Length: 549
Image (cartoon, helix red, strand yellow):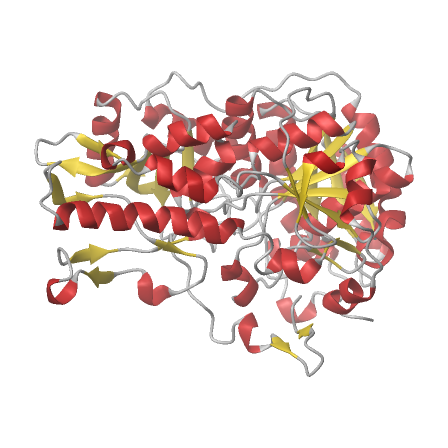
């Protein structure tokens, strides 16, 4: 079989103007970036479409194919005659050259131009990186030029960022040899930085600029917060982001319109594409398929508890993606033997899927369809076990084959999703926004993770008290934790119980307008593995990219 990049390179893409016409966009409403990419340069507020959220079980080394299923589902809807638009996140160069590889789907369910989307695309992540680091430069320059704001060098909170996995930048020293104040600095990956969150949660350019101004850069020696607006940085930063805030229009292999915009990670950020992109898609199409990063305990929780609150939206149906192989890994199966029938391991791993279904149905009270990404090695006994188990939860499971068949392999799933989305439902949340921060964190752990409580470091406790004293206690909570488990311990698979989540740090994001609770050993700057994907990526003599998947 052809590789993902070979499939993408051999497809015949439609001109982006023709894709725009499918959504009713005029030439004046798009700004073309070559033949096959465009920025949507118009504001939309109708939001008439039905919204489908695609999430997944906790990921495993086997892979679940959430983005692939999202794309295949949209193509399946298009084959049913629906006016549909995808709304996905942009890939980060960190995972592209790290462990994960590309993030534009796979097989015959991809968004294209695949290389561009996975690499520089329209420059959004570069613009976010530049805006972030401009604020850092202005902050250090202010201190160097006399420190009129009396900023305390020991209490600088805003960090530099880079869109690359680079563990050497986790802890560095800046300002050496008299080039400014010598101090510790700690880089974050761009996908986890506050500017990314601000761009994705802003509802307009005006709101973006307001949020930038509210970013907390540190404290002065009186203990008062110093904001980006105090450094007069918000205007220049907004200039760097004025094009990046516009959603990007591309297409699937089958010519279904796709808006790909914003890319926060879900394990250390809020894991959803931009509100503006979602607004745009809901205004231009009757059906919108969007996805939230990693498992439903992370991406879906943050989509539902944070993004939906801010944007005033809610999904009409939630799709939970899983595979037989991944469920067997959750059940303790040997990774080397995943292609062999193992119903016992599968049934031991199924509780992970059950918990995510339960959360969507009982906590958030939304209709659920389970999308099982089919593999040739799936046996009839394993398929029957999944169907029987999911049916007992009150949900429906559909085995899809979008990787090999594209939209054709997603039509059955599309029919099930469209049917479920027609049922009236009202979104509930896992916590009350008006509760204290500790209560909100505890409710997420109890209601979504299934844990028995939360422990806090002394530093985290002090920061929570300080945040509430300063008036930030009513903000949504974003928990940064491992994606591999419902708990904060990556080794606790399936559906663990009796665990407590340990919160070691609290970060107030004044611009993004949420409070981050850092749990377990999660890192804000990932590192590369022993053999990163970058070792396989190259350009051939014809100038074509190879090894990108």
